[in-house]
Amino acid sequence: MISDALRYPVSDALGRAALLRCGVSVVALAVGVRYAVAVAPSVVALVPAAVAFVGAVVLFGTAAVILGSDDRRPLPSVRAVVRPGLEALALSVVVLVPAIALLTRSLIETPAALAQENGAGLGLFSLVSSTIAIFFFVACAYAYPAAVAASVSTGRLRAAAEAETVLPALTDPTYFLRWTVGFSFVVVAAWLVAIAVSRGDVLGLLAAGVAAYAVVAGARAVGVGYARASGGAPR
Image 1 (cartoon, one colour):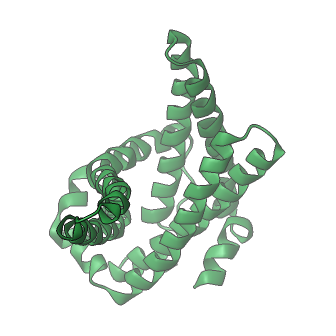
Image 2: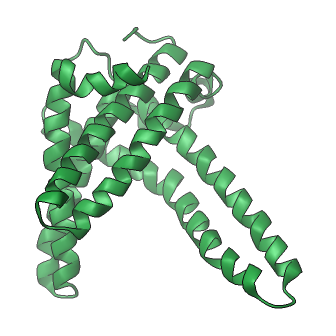
């Protein structure tokens, strides 16, 4: 399972094309964000921000195609991944952003609450709320790839919210196991993207390349799990 995901970006023609596209997208995203922050609040910041947005759309769109498309289909053109990229970004705003915001707030406030004198009750409440926030984030992160895959495989964004389309995958052990692998890869990719954004040297470029590799491998792992769990074509 893990070896298949790790080989996919280099041993499969579609995987190699996706790796190249994701690599360019991560570089565009990192460079755009870095320069947009550097020149903000000038209106000139809109230019690198637009570059970062395009990079994010292509990156999300390519990963979405790997999640929800049959291996027998060729990788769509850059223009063709714009729609799935926008849909994947929209789903991330709805599903992931609130969970990430809640988790971040909880992790920031809990240590301060625990450090307060005579604040045992407040500290316990903060600890419980942080635990709930962690489980909520994991639940959202678990459902998000299945929702994206459902949207891509059916060609309908509404399918991402249809129980009969998404639930069979979420309750299948195959999807759970492969999601665990894919989620681990994506966590590493997010960390590497942060490095690529903060650095403009060779190390940043290397981090962007490895991040793209992790994204493609992670999407492959979860995509296979979704296909098998939903009764799609075997991969």
